[in-house]
Length: 248
Image (cartoon, rainbow, N blue to C red):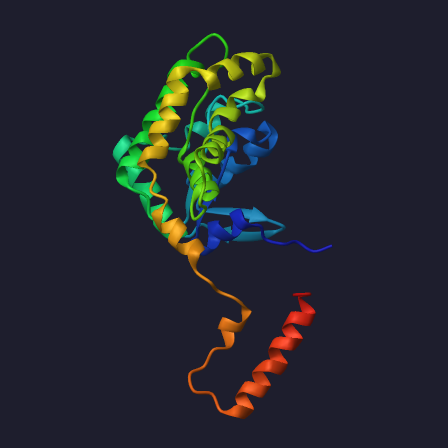
């Protein structure tokens, strides 16, 4: 066998920034091994070799507190860090990120649609998350991004749009089977139905419809203006071959 440097050791002596995520899922005995790297020690010994701490070495640890399966961090590890609490996104930050993400997907949504989606998330948290039938309901920007990935560039009717919202938002409340009946009642409540209708009104499908109206086939890949006869014959051979391969 031979000793191989891991990412933490490389960061320590080469001066990298390292991010260790979800640290509170780690076993206490494993996390304890981090202590000697993170207490300001100028050198450590691994496999009979001395490694010197690089001045640019920085370590970030991230965690979500209170999740199932997580552990409390011991004080020896915690006191090696400056702890920064990351608050939930404000409406303006949520809107900015979601609009930018939609533009990246190729169909920019309106600020109003993102604002209404943010408000809808808060309604779900208030009605279901703080009630006796469900706990710890938190919707992140990830939920909204998944919803955009489901609905963008697709010419959806209201029923399909509603199902997409249920899939990416409301169905997350059904993790506990005991809540299934309450969830169905919640989905059918006037407040939820009306808000989904409101979201649908703010969503602009015109760009998606235009995109789907485009008539584009394999032959468009080979279009060249004023092609000589030889090129046309070669194109026909290529197209015949493509159609045979793809069983078109």
